[in-house]
Length: 227
Image (cartoon, rainbow, N blue to C red; front, side, top):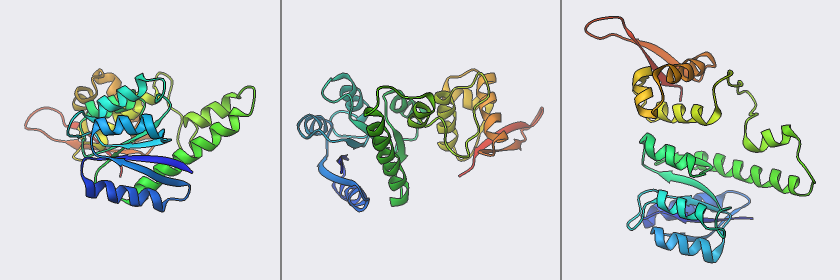
């Protein structure tokens, strides 16, 4: 069983998410926390395999909790999925670079959480198999890191998975669409770099592009993530 700590300042939301986890085969909730300090204490004491971590907490925010987990030898290997209403790119960026496995925006369905829990379970099984061997082959490493997902086109030369995820996060956080200039501002990339990723998503069918007409000048390309 994969042991899970649910962290949320709202008692009812924590109860709902705990119910989702306990419905999922192979997972069990061992505790809930409603503050950052309580979350850190429970991770140290109970040593869960996975933390569902809210960002908005009454004492210290979830990003601080994530950084402290990664900084301590006793908790550095604890997996984390961020669950939050925060949609800003800076929070998404900090979660990604802090080592979160995924980022779920509230409210989400049981199916959305179950899909991520299934991925965590798959990752644990793959690592368990590899740990019994003296060395891993490259294709096995690719599989663990998720760089070979069925149906996903490889990134063109010069594009990286991490930055592609950042651009994707910016698009999904703005269902009204973003131009290349707006995406560059949101992600702090250069406009040409942002446009390369946006056009890649269009070419692979992951995003749509529409023309946005202003008062003057040429129409601007506006990109929308396909839900």
